[in-house]
Image 1 (cartoon, rainbow, N blue to C red):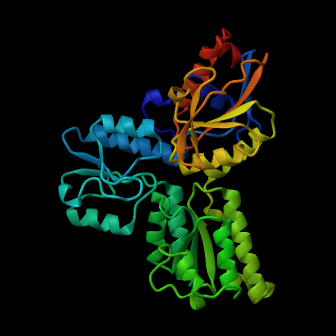
Image 2: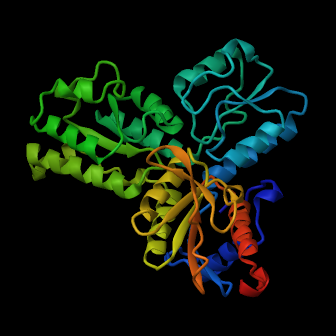
Image 3: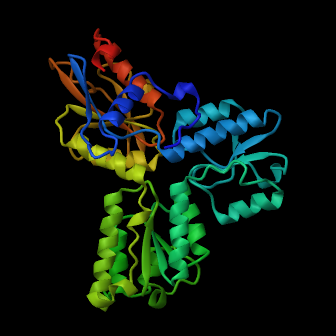
Length: 403
C-alpha cells in the first residue's frame, strides 16, 4: 500500500512499532486479537486495527501539500478535513479557514471566495451543488480534492444502480457531510432516500409490504428523499449503499431485512430483479476497525478507552460497541485525563461532555485497559494517552522494554 508523506508529529514511538510488528506477524490481517503491552501494574490491550486509514492519510498529505505549494495564496477547507480536533486545529494554525461547518452551514459566504484562492475538498467529499458553485467562481476543485476513494466507490456504485433503474437506499446520518455528498451524487442518477438505522429500515419494509399507508413514507422520511419520489414505483427495485463509517453489521442487517421484505412481496425466484447485492460498498478500514473492536471484546478488561473526535461517526460506533461490555471512556486526547480518578468523557447518547471521578481502578494490584481509536485519530495522540496513564501510575518499566 502507498506510503503517505504526512507530518512527522502525527507518527508515534509506541503505536508505530506495535503496528509494524503486527503487520509482519499477520500480513493478511486475519488475526483480530489485540496486542498486549504489559507494564506490570497496568496492561494495555491495543486493538489490532485502528487509527489513520488510507483515505485520511491521503487527505492529510494533500492538505499539507496545498499549504506548501501555495505560500502566498488564501487557502480554504470546504469544511473540517476529518473529524479530529487536533488535525483541524493544526491546519488552521497555517491560516486555513473553513467555508462551512460540519452541518453545511455557511461560515464564509461564497462571494468572499475568488478564482485565485485554493479550496481543499475534505475526505468526506462534497455535493454536486457545492462543486458547481466553486467551479462557477473559477476555483479548480480537482487540484486539492481529498475525497476518499472508498467514498467515491459508493458514488460509482450508486451511479451503476441508478443506470439499472434501482432506487438507492443510503444507510447513513442525513446531516453528515459524507451522506449529504453521497445523497447529492445518488440523486443525480436515481430516486434516493437516507435511512439512519434498523428501525427506519423496518418502517420502510412495512411500507413496501403494505403494512403501513404509503403516505406515511413522506412524513417518516421528511427531508431525506429526492423530489418526486414515488413510493408505488420507486420501491419496486432497490439497492443499498452506506455512509462508509457506519456499523458494517448494521448495514448488512438493514440489507437483509429489505431483502426479506422483497422476497415476501415478490418471491425468492425473482429477488434479483428487486434488490441488488451491494456488499462491495463497505469500507475495508471500517470493517477492520470494527472487527478489531470485537476482538477486544473477547478479552477481559477493567475499562476501555476510545480516542478520537467527539463528532466522528466511525469513532462513535466503536464506543457503541465497547459499551456493551466495558466501562468505556471516549476522549479527544490525554488532555481529557486530569488524574487517576478524574476524566472528561464524551457521552454519545446525551451528546455532551461529562466529568467522571472514578477513572482508573487504582485499588487493584494490576489493571487492564482496552484501547482503540477512530480512523481520523493520529497514532501520536493514542501514544500520549498511554504515556499519560503510565506517568500518573508512576510506572517505571520502559516502553522499549515492553515492546
